[in-house]
Amino acid sequence: MIQQVQISLPAFNRGFHLITTIIKDQLPDLPQQGILHLFIKHTSAGLTLNENADPTVRSDFERFMNDLIPENYAGFEHTMEGPDDMPAHIKTSFFGSELSIPIQNHRMELGTWQGIYLCEFRNHGGNRKILASIYS
Image (tube, rainbow, N blue to C red; front, side, top):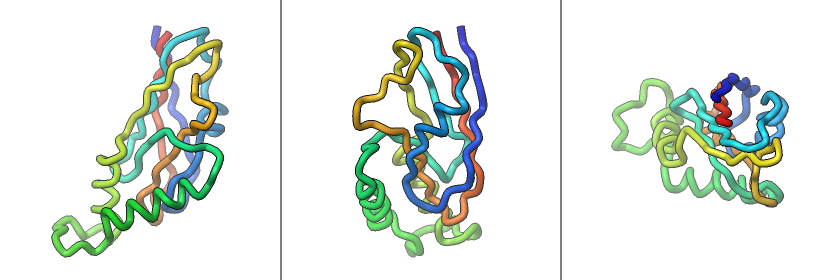
């Protein structure tokens, strides 16, 4: 059986943001076991799982990604939507647009130190939508 729900995220500033609680709060009751698939419906923001305790991990991600894929790179042709747009598309492809998380005992089976990140790659990305599919 498959159940789907659209999750609405508020606008976040550019960076890596823990959204585990926002996801949990908008999900229906989860089955005893299954898979939760999350798909972000945008080309300039991504999803990943990582450290949920130390906020310096998120700032280090931001700093490293900006060094790796800088704004105003002279080789970009797609520049009409601002200097953060093309780097955002590349970063999204780098991180990806989806996650699959096991469900056990009616909850997401995340590791002790794992949290769901919204990777917001635009300076002003706006509200984001995630399609959650629950497979039981």
